Image (cartoon, rainbow, N blue to C red; front, top):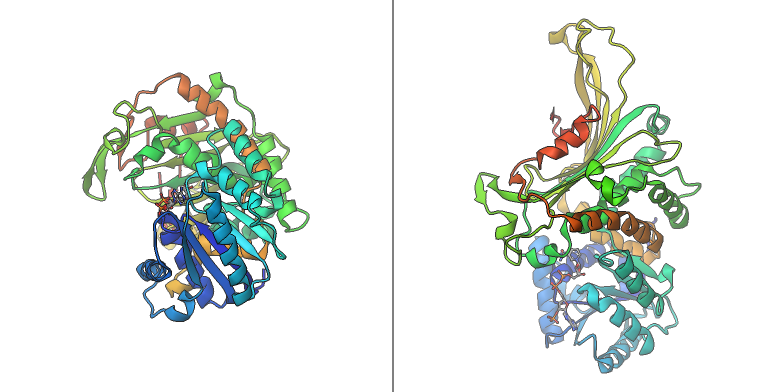
Length: 498
Ligand code: NAP
């Protein structure tokens, strides 16, 4: 989308919280610096703490300074920020907010456009949406949009209740459900790599692809988020949203146009085509794990069960490996292996497409299997694409030797790399909902995930079952070896190892 100077007021509920400080203020600042926000914008922060505008502006400045080390054009930027001490359950506060928004609308000529960004605990989402409507904050001459953070529900039933609450006040096209993975540069690149390259798209099916692996591993543990994580686990925190979204982008059919509606319709078809599993079948397709003590980056670290806010006998999973099958003409028979975990040996998110082997080996060492062709999309921390092919290298005679064609997105200047939240905020201002999750996708993902959650709730596992700093439980390897495959751990520096 071309750059447009956007006119709007952004109201941030939870303006003193972690997300607002770490992600939203630096992102708004970058948009301002890049000229994507005109003079016609304002940010109103609301939270319970009794801050003055001055104190709020200083906090915003501090949080920007933590991430941006340039001399910021602060005064001009800061005068767009305002704060109201606010309790989201108190209707009188909404009246006060509405009055301020009307004044700011006139002052900054924002044409009645309002974004309500809910950077707060999900139990407040329904209440805030209802109060915004009942107190008239959604009646404006411009557009109004609601941005919602994850988690969107705990299962299909609670997600449905939440959705019904929100839909009383906002239409589906006004709701922007954030999945910040969809704002990442290389996740957005999946579509371009697939639909702008004849060499890939023609091979993108079960005739040529042996399997697809999507991995997102962290070296960190739950740190101080133990209490939240106990009610979520890797299944709800990562798999239901980020991992299934990446899978849908890899597997979808080419849309007839690159519009939000057409892309979403293709993603929904992938989720509908997922081979259903029964509770009794879960162990054949899913492996769960929980980290024990271990060594990470040369430091001894504690077990999950020893973290703050975690039950000493907790049955919460910090690792998942899964084998998914998509029952359609393109993908029948191709396993999609998905893996995500905390306290792993490396921090990395990547997608590996493994192509099928050639029917025979013509070269010297005929008994040896040739290295398969791999296309690797590196999502983070390195961003890039590598294509693994075989070629002759002088020292090996004519024996085919794996080499890599490598593209890395080098960050010359930190300011030029775009943060996911910056992309998503801007998309929302432009009314582009392509990289947000529609209710249909949320509902289908929960429907699939609920079966796994139920099976796991029925029976405790033998936790902990992997060491911190490892690649997860042994069963995760077996999930692939049963099919004759193994996980690829591919770094963007060019080494491929098991
Ligand atoms: P947080 O640090 O706990 O912040 C919560 C905010 O809500 C604070 O500003 C708090 O301010 C305000 N608040 C609490 N009760 C309130 C009330 N009754 N009325 C008005 N304000 C109230 O939470 P967070 O980490 O920023 O997370 C916010 C949301 O983003 C959650 O849904 C979370 O799941 C999601 N999320 C966060 C991250 C992240 O990196 N942090 C990542 C992904 C998703 P006062 O105490 O001043 O009222």
